[in-house]
Each structure stands twice: as structure tokens, then as C-alpha cells.
Image (cartoon, rainbow, N blue to C red; front, side):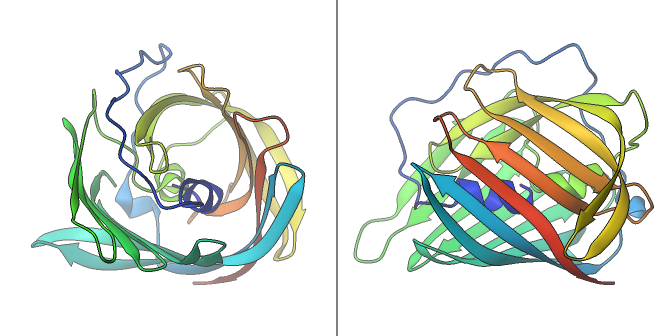
Length: 248
């Protein structure tokens, strides 16, 4: 998930539904592939603005990337922290150090917690709720799910004409979304952290759920997300993230 995607997905504590979305065939583009050697440790702060039903909420999000390990496997640890209306959000993802494929995700929102293992055949784990019984999560997929979108794009071979397809997990609705991404151009973008030369990527949810996003990634490596805009399935629903500061 990106800064905007993570906050949007974690807006409310997820509830497991009885139906699991069937895999949706994506565009003919190649699957998103990433190289962990293209990224570097970083501490990134974002200004987040969320508009829902005509009301706007603004807060900060902190994303940190560091080299660690997960169950003996070399990994990148990407953690997003923010205070959202549902409580304090801490979203931690472990990605394989080589290809940035997601291994494990741990989401804490207020007193609740979701722990997930992510594999090429599906997502499995448990929802832990205070005072209630743990609830299992099992979501089959037709391939790997992107664990952290900003980091995946940072490790991708972005260039003019680039396109790719990928999957993300919607925690709130317990669904898999299929996306198509295209580099639509190169732009100079000014945000609170300064002015950056970026690639502008247009993202479309090919499953027809009405989701769309524009993502501006820094062109120079190591890359990071500079700005993103996510529009929701409801009219007027929007999440905007802008980079406030960077520490390498």
C-alpha cells in the first residue's frame, strides 16, 4: 500500500465477509516486477487529506523503510504510522529483499490487530479484536499481492511508456483489487518537501469498482512517492498524500 492506500484501507477496522471476490483478469500488461537493490532506507513524512461525504480530515503519516529479516529471510521492513479516526494506525509490511514480494503484514488500528501471511496463492491470517474471539482470514488470489505500493514502484523499472498490472488487498472490504498502471508522463511537482522531477503514473482498478489513482514517483533513484491522489467508489471520496520531509 502507498501512504494514501494504507490510510484509506485502514480507515475502519476490517470485517470479514462471507464472500470472497473472484480473481479479475487484468490488462494485457506484464505483472509488476521490482528489484530490491533499487531502493534504500528512508524516513518519509506525508501530509494526508481525506474527503468523505463532504467532510475533510487532515493528518500526518510517517513511512519508514529499513533492512531487516522475516523468519530467516532477508527482507525490507516498511512501516506506516498515522493517527486516524479509528485510532492509532501502525501498518508493518515485510517484503522479500530481492524482488520485494510481500511476505507478512501486521496492521494495528486502535486496540484491534490483523496479522497476515501473503503468498502467491492467497492471503491468510487472523483478526484479533479486544474482548472477542480471533477470526481467521482466508482470501485466495491468482498471484502475489503488492505489500507496499510506493516501495514496489520505487523498485520498478519506471520509464516513459512503462505499464504493468498488479493486485492490492482491500482490508476494509476483504477484497483483492486488480490494477493497471501506466507511466503517463514526466512532470515537475512541488510539495511541502520541495520540488521534484517525477514520473506520473495513472492507476485504474480494472475490476470495475470505480477506484482510480494518480501517483507521482521521484525520477531519481532511490525513488520515493512524492504525491498521490486516490479517488473512491463514492462520489467525492478522495485521499491525497503529499511528501513533507525525507531523511535518508
